Length: 469
Image 1 (cartoon, helix red, strand yellow):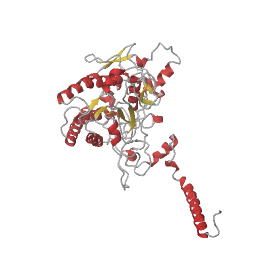
Image 2: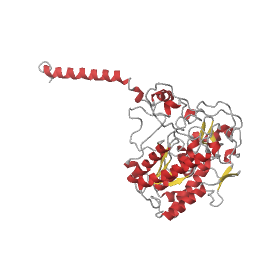
Image 3: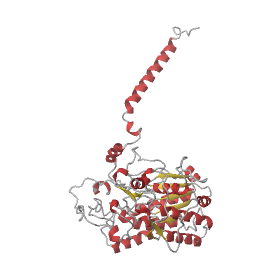
Image 4: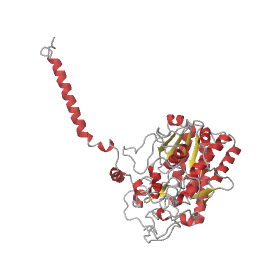
């Protein structure tokens, strides 16, 4: 029996009205989709460059590693638009600071240079965030004051911590002994060694670039120059082999989370190269019951959403959330690093303190390991081998805030240890290696194998000793 459409005119009216409303809704959605398209498709490099103009003028952060196609360094905007807070229009032009104009004369400023290079445009960008204008004595005094303040702030926030939570080191004596051992492993020197320990790289092709280029013109039995050096620690020797079973036993099925910037991702590659016999198939799967994960959060912020409050994604600073209940439940070991950014010492200190306090409060037995930040080496393609440790006068010539890393790392150590964490100065291993970088425009990350090989040896020793104590 056919439906009585003529008799139920009111039913037809309702159907027609619903169809018209649906068509109107679709047309309206289509017309507004163009205005929101920029948030709904993956960002391309051109998108990211265009979004740079959206940054607020009072943004104090400028990450040193967040633009892969631009030397992993911040752009070079004028100081008054990046490094100083927004101000009301002045009645008269501000008086220029002395030495503000950059020196464009090419010099042989840094020990690995083989030809003159121009200094960075950020060399004299702002004395509000760097101490390059101070003497060495003044910088040492500021470092001492900053370290004492960082330790005091952390202790007031957390109280007195005993031992290292997440380990068997439940007394201060055991914790101090372990920290001294870690400092011994990171206080070595590079020695020429044709058969030095080296990792076999099997993961991200970015870090295999040097080998790929080298073996186009060399036999497979030869080794790159950058792999012919050994990190030597005479009083506490590092192992020449890293047995996977022993490392897995030390992890005891606990998952590892790495958090930091793009340079921190190198550590992800080091772990996979050291603990696997072939490329990983499952995400982060190690050759044992433990898994490995990397999250990018350049400044270790505790915010739960990424991006800025107005909805625009940040080009310079990435802040993926990692302080959540599910992550803290699944990852009892965290290896952290806070990216070198242009900010005040107080901003650095309070931000790191608050993050570690939040982690301790949410997961009291979390094992926190903090990696120190290494300097980059401008014009690293000039380098031919290891160098002596940089003097303070040489450090002051480094761009992108790297001139401040010695003090910031010391502040981080004071904060991390006061919060019951383990500070590992892996920067000391690579600061003297301007060679071995990926190169060209990337003088922050290293090829594997190369200067990062001792990172695997040191981390192996740490986990094995933590398990044996």
